Length: 89
Image (cartoon, rainbow, N blue to C red; front, side, top):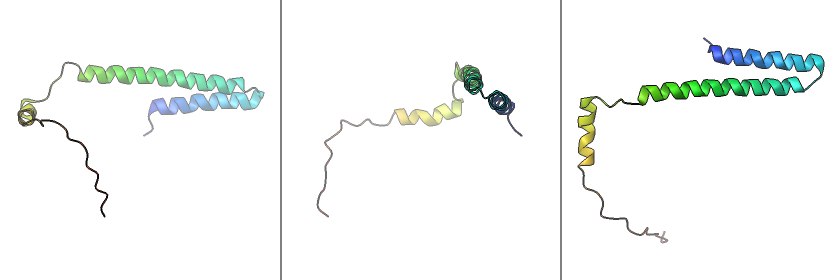
């Protein structure tokens, strides 16, 4: 099944391309590109809002947190040494 947003964007592009072809005026092609850009901006804003609402204020399940906690109790490295290059083959 084709995503309706994809189908609508494709139809919008086709309408403006046909108008540009029939009239010979490339302005219609440019207007179609701008309209598709606006549609993409609206869709991306909606997706961003939806993802934010899914992530904000949520935490992992207690068993997942219990599995992750020991990783924070592991010893931390004292420092980072200089890299050693071995040129002998």
